[in-house]
Length: 285
Image (cartoon, rainbow, N blue to C red; front, side):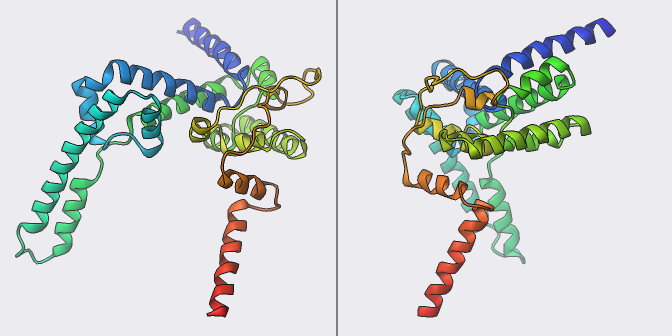
């Protein structure tokens, strides 16, 4: 048992080292790889399987983000077939809910009927791709935390992009004190380096918000050409192997970048601006 445990630890160590060599948050990078693989197999094999059909119906199909991934495949016949499964199922659930609302009108509490109808319409499962991503997220975070005490893994993490802020938060909820202290120091170092860097602000956005799949769906930046040789350990991997400075592809993205360079919380800034606009309108009225 002891030999087997040591072998497993060594195996996960090499897995962690391989993931930390890739640009970007290791969890986000795995998400992007799995999405491509997941939809490849779904479009080519799984969409007509009875288990997959039942699973899709219980979740009313994919979530909005992963529905766009399905449409991005361009498999028109598969998309039509999937929505035919969902349309018929949704209509049957609506008819059942309507029957509950119209039935037993002599009940004393009409709120019970509304609650039962809402339960009928409620999705029974979450999006199948979201479940897969959640599994990989837990798996990779566990690998990082399990192998982080190793000196070689810790050194690789220091020279890598490291976890993005959302996955850093999730890892922090499960990490021991030493690992949490190390991850916190590294996150602070990365954010400070990106704030003073002259490189693309999208790097800061990826570090703070994660490598969002929806952004990558609409925009696929090319790798930046190295302008000069940088010494090992001089900057995190995110700066040494960053993306080229792309042009913003939407006014909303430009607004986000403008908020990120402002001091303070960007959400609080937007709320403050909205409140000020509302008060100005109220005074004029």
